Image (cartoon, rainbow, N blue to C red; front, top):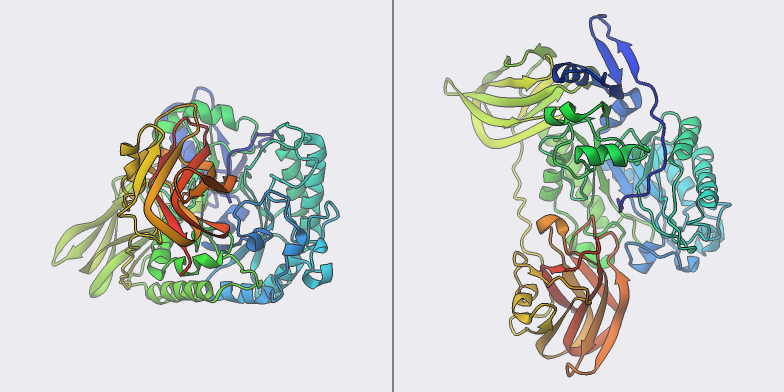
Length: 633
């Protein structure tokens, strides 16, 4: 999934396109605008108001819901990040049915699907000429299979748009780290995918980058990659390291309360992105990407809308032990409101299983989501027409009669820019206006939920905007309310009430927070150069231990999250057996969910030791919300 930031290569900025409006009274800037060096803040804000999406960006935004299929060798190893040493013979999804995937996704309301054609392990889901580490070396379809082809044919048959994720980081390629050679290798893979399968609608790169076998860090040639994409698939949006679509900054399905598509953030593939974004104090996870304060400091802006990615399960690849942890309908509805309803496109991951099918529970859940959306948003209680609203102005829509309302949806005409900076929504209740919601940005779509009221009218007040706000539509609904309480996470299969910390880095007293059964309390080890660890006495010998669990914390910006670890067990606290050595929690720096680790075989122990090899940012301390022990039922 989205991973640590890459070394940035150069990517030339195309010239700003200046378009005359139909009426000839306004000038719009497509995708990018540069401010004159002596421009005042008012002039900059005026130009920012006229920044608009390209046609392919607009078409992408209107999809609203897209799907990710994380599938590959990790599906068969149980890992999130493979290391490239996997045997291709492990890949054998005997019941693979791409039509089942696409039909289920279409029933779930999705309009586009992106396949992990290659993840970080380097295993290719098509018979590439670049490496033997592919489906051609697997027993699946007797080595003659092509997952990319089968999925594309299913998409064409059922009218689903198609995209590919090709990981730049390749832990199998021997040439990785030899930058010119690997760039040739990668371009050949990219060319195969964009030439042999018909139209591709989205090309998805994260910025994952590391050292190769030669000890040198790979330098990606982003300019060359995007030249290939624009030449071979000119209508495809380029996502995450591209300049059409940006990563929202988390993997939890959450758009910002203030989500600007017109942003000062320089896309990661541009050679100047590091220097400019650092000077502005910006990164992808920043809470503010387009306010007036930032515009005052900036020399340019981009139409760079957010894509909100999240998995329907705790992990991105299928793991059978997570079958009971599929997100509930209520959780998915919350995600819908907080992604599509916050000026973003939702990218929901639904991973195929080892049979090559989408799991039944996943299929049912996305079908329930689409049925909920279709049912609850079919009847707009208002009749509104596009309107231009001045700053401080109001737009009122009457209801035919007093009607129960608990949701209002606002939309700007983004073909004329994103302009609303602060708004209030009020409802006429018993002859009086009551404020039911407020916010900052609107953009393509903003959804507001509030306790139901009996209203006879809905009013939008534009408190602040960049020039006149172009309101495309105001809608009102009374939707079914769901209980989205998630409940407590079960970290340990063994009761922790008798556990004691024997010793821990920095002292055992503070470390009690790691085994107290309370995820809100967090152990932060002492800062030191020594390896950080905690030893625990479970109070009795436990038979049939199948693994352990580590719950990280998002407090303090995830600081202290363990990346690589060792794990030991013991019967007497003196003689230790190492059951996991220098293993990584794949993708934990972005997906800080409960980590459940299975041992190769069950063991018997009274004591365990959790030891950090390194922290996600090489800090000198670690944090643990909870540790647990897993046991077969």
